[in-house]
Image (cartoon, rainbow over all chains, first blue to last red; front, side, top):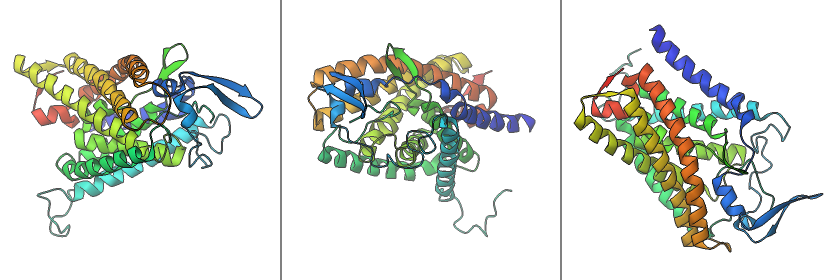
Length: 123
Length: 233
C-alpha cells in the first residue's frame, strides 16, 4: 500500500518539480522546427524588438492570436522569472482537463452498467 | 514578425488556410475515433495514470535541451504516452497538452492546432506505438520474461523513430500548403537532421520514464498489460 502511494506521490512530485524548477534550466535556443523556419533569416535586435532580415518561413508568422493572454509565453503577465509558476499552473490545468476527460470516457466503458445506482462504484 | 524563442510548435501562417482547415478536420475526426476507442483502454485504475502522463508530458516539453549550437529540442511524448496508457488515450493526452499550450500559453498557433495535433498526437503516437508494439512482440517471441533494459531499449527506439515521423508530418504539410520561400528539399533535410538529434533526447527521456514506471508498477503499463507479459524485475 505504501509502495502504491509512493508511486503516485513520486510521479506527481517529479512532474511539479520539472515544470516548476527544472524548466528554468531549459535551453533558450529555437527548437528544431523553429530553426528550420528561421533558416535564411538573421534575427536583428532593434529598438522595436526583434526583427527578421533575409528570406525565411518565419516571416510568414504573425503574432499569436492569444499573445496577450495572462499566461502567454509561460509567464505570469510577461513578468520575468515567473516561468516556474506558470509551468505549475499548466501542470494543474492539464491534469484537471485530462483526468476529468478520461474519467468521463471511462464512465461510458462498454460492459459498464448505464445506471450507477445499480452498480455502485467500488469505493 | 518577432522570433518567438519560447514557442515550441508550429505557429500560424506557416501553411496556408486551406491546408490548416484540412488538417484540423483530420485531427478532429481521428481524435473522435480515439475518444471512442479509448473506452477500452481506460478504467478506474488507469484514468489517474493517463491524467498524470498528460501533465508529465506538458512539464517535460517545457525543458528544451541543446542539440546543436544555437538549436534546441524538446520531448514530443508520443511514444511515451502510447506505451504507458495506450495509443488512443495517448493521442488524446498529447492533443490535450497541445490545446492547453496553445490556448493558455500562446504556444503553437491556434489555426495550426490541427497540423500540430496531426504531427505530434496522431503521427508521433501512431508511429511510436507501432514500432514499440512490433519490437515488443518480436522480443517476446524470443524470450518469455523480458528484462527491464530490453523494454527500455524498445522505448528508446520508439521515441527516436516516432519523433522523426512526426517531423516528416510537418514536411508533408509544408509540401501541401507551405506559404513561404524555402525549398522543400532544404526543409526536409534540416527537419530530418534536427529531429534525428531531438529523437535521441526523446528516446532517452522515453526509456528512463518507461523503465521507472515498469519497475514500480508494471501492472499499469499498457504495452505490458496488453500482452500479459512477464517482466523480469
